[in-house]
Image (cartoon, rainbow, N blue to C red; front, side, top):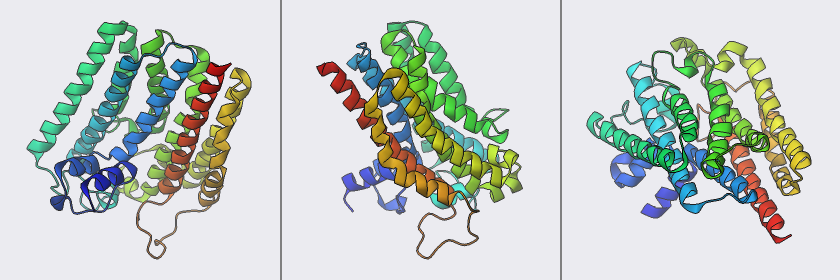
Length: 330
Protein backbone atom coordinates (compact mmCIF):
# COMPACT_ATOMS: atom_id res chain seq x y z
CA UNK A 1 0.00 0.00 0.00
CA UNK A 2 1.35 3.46 -0.93
CA UNK A 3 2.39 5.89 1.80
CA UNK A 4 -0.37 8.48 1.10
CA UNK A 5 -2.99 5.71 1.24
CA UNK A 6 -1.60 4.58 4.58
CA UNK A 7 -1.90 8.14 5.90
CA UNK A 8 -5.53 8.30 4.77
CA UNK A 9 -6.25 4.90 6.27
CA UNK A 10 -4.72 6.01 9.57
CA UNK A 11 -7.07 9.01 9.55
CA UNK A 12 -10.06 6.73 8.94
CA UNK A 13 -9.29 3.80 11.22
CA UNK A 14 -6.42 2.08 13.04
CA UNK A 15 -4.78 0.01 10.28
CA UNK A 16 -3.38 -3.41 11.12
CA UNK A 17 0.13 -2.86 9.77
CA UNK A 18 3.65 -3.77 10.84
CA UNK A 19 4.87 -0.43 12.20
CA UNK A 20 8.49 -1.44 11.65
CA UNK A 21 7.84 -1.47 7.90
CA UNK A 22 6.03 1.86 7.49
CA UNK A 23 7.22 5.45 7.29
CA UNK A 24 7.56 7.57 10.48
CA UNK A 25 4.47 9.66 9.69
CA UNK A 26 2.25 6.58 9.38
CA UNK A 27 3.80 5.11 12.54
CA UNK A 28 2.93 8.14 14.66
CA UNK A 29 -0.48 8.66 13.07
CA UNK A 30 -1.30 5.12 14.20
CA UNK A 31 0.33 5.34 17.62
CA UNK A 32 -1.40 8.65 18.38
CA UNK A 33 -4.77 7.24 17.23
CA UNK A 34 -5.50 10.18 14.96
CA UNK A 35 -8.57 8.37 13.59
CA UNK A 36 -10.38 9.51 16.75
CA UNK A 37 -8.75 12.96 16.59
CA UNK A 38 -10.95 13.50 13.52
CA UNK A 39 -13.82 13.95 16.00
CA UNK A 40 -11.97 16.97 17.41
CA UNK A 41 -11.56 18.44 13.95
CA UNK A 42 -15.29 17.96 13.39
CA UNK A 43 -16.10 19.89 16.58
CA UNK A 44 -13.82 22.73 15.51
CA UNK A 45 -15.40 22.87 12.04
CA UNK A 46 -18.88 23.03 13.59
CA UNK A 47 -17.75 25.92 15.78
CA UNK A 48 -16.29 27.66 12.72
CA UNK A 49 -19.50 27.28 10.71
CA UNK A 50 -21.53 28.68 13.59
CA UNK A 51 -19.21 31.69 13.55
CA UNK A 52 -19.80 32.07 9.80
CA UNK A 53 -23.54 32.11 10.46
CA UNK A 54 -23.13 35.02 12.88
CA UNK A 55 -20.72 36.83 10.55
CA UNK A 56 -17.82 36.71 13.04
CA UNK A 57 -15.66 34.17 11.21
CA UNK A 58 -11.91 34.83 10.98
CA UNK A 59 -9.81 32.47 8.85
CA UNK A 60 -6.43 32.85 10.63
CA UNK A 61 -8.00 32.47 14.08
CA UNK A 62 -10.03 29.47 12.95
CA UNK A 63 -7.05 27.66 11.41
CA UNK A 64 -4.98 28.25 14.54
CA UNK A 65 -7.81 27.08 16.80
CA UNK A 66 -8.35 23.95 14.70
CA UNK A 67 -4.63 23.17 14.75
CA UNK A 68 -4.39 23.80 18.50
CA UNK A 69 -7.32 21.50 19.29
CA UNK A 70 -6.05 18.70 17.04
CA UNK A 71 -2.57 18.93 18.56
CA UNK A 72 -3.99 19.00 22.10
CA UNK A 73 -6.09 15.88 21.49
CA UNK A 74 -3.17 14.08 19.86
CA UNK A 75 -0.95 14.91 22.83
CA UNK A 76 -3.72 13.79 25.18
CA UNK A 77 -3.86 10.36 23.50
CA UNK A 78 -0.13 9.92 23.99
CA UNK A 79 -0.09 11.26 27.56
CA UNK A 80 -2.98 9.02 28.58
CA UNK A 81 -1.27 6.01 26.98
CA UNK A 82 1.75 6.81 29.11
CA UNK A 83 -0.26 7.08 32.33
CA UNK A 84 -2.18 3.86 31.67
CA UNK A 85 1.08 2.09 30.82
CA UNK A 86 2.77 3.38 33.96
CA UNK A 87 -0.18 2.29 36.12
CA UNK A 88 -0.07 -1.17 34.56
CA UNK A 89 -3.49 -0.75 32.97
CA UNK A 90 -2.17 -0.92 29.42
CA UNK A 91 -0.37 -4.25 29.34
CA UNK A 92 0.38 -6.44 26.28
CA UNK A 93 -2.89 -8.35 26.84
CA UNK A 94 -5.06 -5.28 27.45
CA UNK A 95 -7.82 -4.25 24.99
CA UNK A 96 -5.88 -1.07 24.17
CA UNK A 97 -2.91 -3.11 22.96
CA UNK A 98 -5.17 -5.57 21.14
CA UNK A 99 -7.21 -3.28 18.89
CA UNK A 100 -4.24 -1.14 17.91
CA UNK A 101 -0.47 -0.84 18.45
CA UNK A 102 0.46 0.71 21.79
CA UNK A 103 3.59 2.86 21.67
CA UNK A 104 5.03 1.49 24.93
CA UNK A 105 3.64 -1.97 25.68
CA UNK A 106 4.75 -3.32 22.29
CA UNK A 107 7.93 -1.24 22.17
CA UNK A 108 6.62 0.38 18.99
CA UNK A 109 8.54 3.46 20.09
CA UNK A 110 11.41 4.01 22.49
CA UNK A 111 10.57 5.95 25.65
CA UNK A 112 12.91 8.70 24.45
CA UNK A 113 11.24 9.12 21.06
CA UNK A 114 7.81 8.86 22.70
CA UNK A 115 8.71 11.63 25.15
CA UNK A 116 10.22 13.87 22.46
CA UNK A 117 7.22 13.56 20.16
CA UNK A 118 4.74 14.10 23.00
CA UNK A 119 6.58 17.14 24.36
CA UNK A 120 6.93 18.65 20.89
CA UNK A 121 3.18 18.34 20.28
CA UNK A 122 2.38 19.77 23.72
CA UNK A 123 4.71 22.73 23.14
CA UNK A 124 3.10 23.45 19.77
CA UNK A 125 -0.43 23.27 21.22
CA UNK A 126 0.57 25.50 24.15
CA UNK A 127 2.20 28.04 21.85
CA UNK A 128 -1.01 28.30 19.84
CA UNK A 129 -3.03 28.71 23.03
CA UNK A 130 -0.73 31.50 24.27
CA UNK A 131 -0.94 33.31 20.94
CA UNK A 132 -4.74 33.09 20.83
CA UNK A 133 -4.94 34.41 24.38
CA UNK A 134 -2.72 37.38 23.53
CA UNK A 135 -4.59 38.01 20.28
CA UNK A 136 -8.17 37.67 21.49
CA UNK A 137 -8.12 38.20 25.26
CA UNK A 138 -7.90 36.27 28.54
CA UNK A 139 -11.39 34.75 28.13
CA UNK A 140 -9.82 32.13 25.87
CA UNK A 141 -7.93 30.80 28.88
CA UNK A 142 -11.17 29.52 30.40
CA UNK A 143 -11.73 27.26 27.40
CA UNK A 144 -8.05 26.35 26.92
CA UNK A 145 -7.28 25.48 30.52
CA UNK A 146 -10.59 23.65 31.09
CA UNK A 147 -10.07 21.58 27.95
CA UNK A 148 -6.43 20.87 28.82
CA UNK A 149 -7.44 19.77 32.31
CA UNK A 150 -10.01 17.34 30.94
CA UNK A 151 -7.82 15.96 28.15
CA UNK A 152 -4.62 15.52 30.14
CA UNK A 153 -6.23 14.22 33.32
CA UNK A 154 -8.58 11.78 31.62
CA UNK A 155 -6.24 8.93 32.55
CA UNK A 156 -3.51 10.88 34.33
CA UNK A 157 -2.85 12.66 37.57
CA UNK A 158 -3.80 11.63 41.09
CA UNK A 159 -7.52 11.47 40.28
CA UNK A 160 -7.89 10.28 36.66
CA UNK A 161 -11.38 11.13 35.45
CA UNK A 162 -12.15 7.85 33.71
CA UNK A 163 -11.29 5.84 36.83
CA UNK A 164 -14.14 7.47 38.75
CA UNK A 165 -17.00 7.53 36.26
CA UNK A 166 -16.30 11.09 35.10
CA UNK A 167 -14.77 10.33 31.70
CA UNK A 168 -18.09 10.40 29.83
CA UNK A 169 -19.14 13.68 31.46
CA UNK A 170 -15.77 15.22 30.62
CA UNK A 171 -15.99 14.10 26.99
CA UNK A 172 -19.46 15.62 26.56
CA UNK A 173 -18.28 18.96 27.96
CA UNK A 174 -14.98 19.01 26.08
CA UNK A 175 -16.23 18.00 22.62
CA UNK A 176 -19.31 20.20 22.99
CA UNK A 177 -19.25 23.54 24.83
CA UNK A 178 -15.46 23.70 25.16
CA UNK A 179 -14.37 22.73 21.64
CA UNK A 180 -17.35 23.92 19.59
CA UNK A 181 -18.16 26.82 21.88
CA UNK A 182 -14.50 27.68 22.33
CA UNK A 183 -13.85 27.80 18.60
CA UNK A 184 -16.78 30.18 18.22
CA UNK A 185 -15.63 32.27 21.19
CA UNK A 186 -12.12 32.77 19.81
CA UNK A 187 -13.60 34.58 16.81
CA UNK A 188 -16.69 36.20 18.37
CA UNK A 189 -15.47 37.09 21.85
CA UNK A 190 -18.74 35.80 23.31
CA UNK A 191 -20.70 32.57 23.58
CA UNK A 192 -24.47 32.84 22.94
CA UNK A 193 -26.81 30.27 24.46
CA UNK A 194 -27.85 28.99 21.04
CA UNK A 195 -24.23 28.10 20.23
CA UNK A 196 -24.00 26.10 23.45
CA UNK A 197 -27.14 24.18 22.42
CA UNK A 198 -25.73 23.72 18.94
CA UNK A 199 -22.73 21.98 20.50
CA UNK A 200 -24.87 19.33 22.20
CA UNK A 201 -25.82 17.05 19.26
CA UNK A 202 -22.29 16.19 18.21
CA UNK A 203 -21.03 16.11 21.80
CA UNK A 204 -23.68 13.49 22.56
CA UNK A 205 -22.38 11.43 19.64
CA UNK A 206 -18.79 11.50 20.88
CA UNK A 207 -20.04 10.48 24.33
CA UNK A 208 -21.79 7.42 22.85
CA UNK A 209 -18.48 6.36 21.31
CA UNK A 210 -16.80 6.44 24.71
CA UNK A 211 -19.72 4.59 26.29
CA UNK A 212 -19.33 1.86 23.67
CA UNK A 213 -15.60 1.62 24.30
CA UNK A 214 -16.06 1.31 28.05
CA UNK A 215 -18.80 -1.27 27.60
CA UNK A 216 -16.40 -3.33 25.51
CA UNK A 217 -13.76 -3.12 28.25
CA UNK A 218 -15.95 -3.91 31.25
CA UNK A 219 -14.46 -7.34 31.95
CA UNK A 220 -10.94 -5.95 31.75
CA UNK A 221 -11.78 -2.83 33.77
CA UNK A 222 -13.25 -5.02 36.51
CA UNK A 223 -9.89 -6.72 37.02
CA UNK A 224 -8.12 -3.33 37.11
CA UNK A 225 -10.73 -1.63 39.34
CA UNK A 226 -11.38 1.11 36.79
CA UNK A 227 -14.80 2.51 37.59
CA UNK A 228 -16.00 3.93 34.29
CA UNK A 229 -19.61 5.04 33.99
CA UNK A 230 -20.73 1.67 32.51
CA UNK A 231 -19.03 -0.02 35.47
CA UNK A 232 -20.96 2.15 37.91
CA UNK A 233 -24.29 1.78 36.11
CA UNK A 234 -24.05 -1.89 35.21
CA UNK A 235 -23.89 -3.38 31.72
CA UNK A 236 -27.61 -3.36 30.96
CA UNK A 237 -28.22 0.19 32.18
CA UNK A 238 -25.14 1.44 30.32
CA UNK A 239 -26.39 -0.08 27.06
CA UNK A 240 -29.78 1.56 27.59
CA UNK A 241 -28.17 4.93 28.38
CA UNK A 242 -26.12 4.75 25.18
CA UNK A 243 -29.29 4.10 23.18
CA UNK A 244 -30.96 7.08 24.88
CA UNK A 245 -27.98 9.35 24.15
CA UNK A 246 -28.02 8.25 20.51
CA UNK A 247 -31.70 9.20 20.21
CA UNK A 248 -31.01 12.47 22.04
CA UNK A 249 -28.62 13.45 19.24
CA UNK A 250 -31.64 13.80 16.95
CA UNK A 251 -33.87 15.39 19.60
CA UNK A 252 -31.21 18.08 20.15
CA UNK A 253 -31.07 18.75 16.40
CA UNK A 254 -34.86 19.04 16.26
CA UNK A 255 -34.75 21.62 19.07
CA UNK A 256 -32.06 23.55 17.20
CA UNK A 257 -34.04 23.45 13.96
CA UNK A 258 -37.12 24.88 15.68
CA UNK A 259 -35.37 27.44 17.91
CA UNK A 260 -32.91 28.78 15.35
CA UNK A 261 -34.85 27.93 12.17
CA UNK A 262 -32.06 25.78 10.75
CA UNK A 263 -33.79 23.16 8.59
CA UNK A 264 -30.52 22.33 6.86
CA UNK A 265 -29.55 20.32 9.92
CA UNK A 266 -32.33 17.86 9.15
CA UNK A 267 -29.83 16.28 6.77
CA UNK A 268 -28.71 14.18 9.76
CA UNK A 269 -31.73 11.93 9.16
CA UNK A 270 -29.45 10.26 6.62
CA UNK A 271 -27.73 8.63 9.58
CA UNK A 272 -30.94 7.01 10.86
CA UNK A 273 -30.12 3.58 9.35
CA UNK A 274 -26.98 3.55 11.47
CA UNK A 275 -28.96 4.74 14.48
CA UNK A 276 -31.09 1.63 14.04
CA UNK A 277 -27.86 -0.41 14.00
CA UNK A 278 -26.90 1.15 17.34
CA UNK A 279 -30.33 0.64 18.91
CA UNK A 280 -30.47 -2.97 17.78
CA UNK A 281 -26.84 -3.77 18.61
CA UNK A 282 -26.98 -2.23 22.08
CA UNK A 283 -30.21 -4.04 22.93
CA UNK A 284 -28.33 -7.28 23.67
CA UNK A 285 -25.09 -8.08 25.50
CA UNK A 286 -21.78 -8.39 23.70
CA UNK A 287 -21.27 -11.93 22.31
CA UNK A 288 -18.79 -14.20 24.03
CA UNK A 289 -16.92 -14.84 20.79
CA UNK A 290 -16.41 -12.67 17.69
CA UNK A 291 -18.27 -13.52 14.48
CA UNK A 292 -16.24 -15.18 11.77
CA UNK A 293 -13.73 -12.81 10.14
CA UNK A 294 -14.63 -9.99 12.53
CA UNK A 295 -11.57 -7.68 12.40
CA UNK A 296 -11.77 -5.49 15.51
CA UNK A 297 -12.29 -7.86 18.43
CA UNK A 298 -12.41 -7.29 21.43
CA UNK A 299 -14.14 -4.07 20.35
CA UNK A 300 -17.83 -4.48 19.61
CA UNK A 301 -20.17 -1.75 20.83
CA UNK A 302 -17.74 1.06 20.11
CA UNK A 303 -17.61 0.16 16.41
CA UNK A 304 -21.37 0.65 16.02
CA UNK A 305 -21.31 3.93 17.95
CA UNK A 306 -18.26 5.18 16.06
CA UNK A 307 -19.57 4.62 12.53
CA UNK A 308 -22.94 6.11 13.51
CA UNK A 309 -21.30 9.20 14.98
CA UNK A 310 -18.98 9.53 11.98
CA UNK A 311 -21.89 9.48 9.52
CA UNK A 312 -23.91 11.80 11.75
CA UNK A 313 -21.02 14.25 12.11
CA UNK A 314 -20.39 14.41 8.37
CA UNK A 315 -24.07 15.05 7.66
CA UNK A 316 -24.31 17.60 10.48
CA UNK A 317 -21.39 19.55 9.02
CA UNK A 318 -22.77 19.38 5.46
CA UNK A 319 -26.25 20.38 6.64
CA UNK A 320 -24.87 23.26 8.69
CA UNK A 321 -22.73 24.45 5.77
CA UNK A 322 -25.75 24.32 3.47
CA UNK A 323 -27.80 26.23 6.04
CA UNK A 324 -25.15 28.94 6.35
CA UNK A 325 -24.75 29.19 2.58
CA UNK A 326 -28.51 29.45 2.08
CA UNK A 327 -28.87 32.19 4.67
CA UNK A 328 -26.00 34.14 3.08
CA UNK A 329 -27.82 34.15 -0.26
CA UNK A 330 -31.04 35.59 1.17
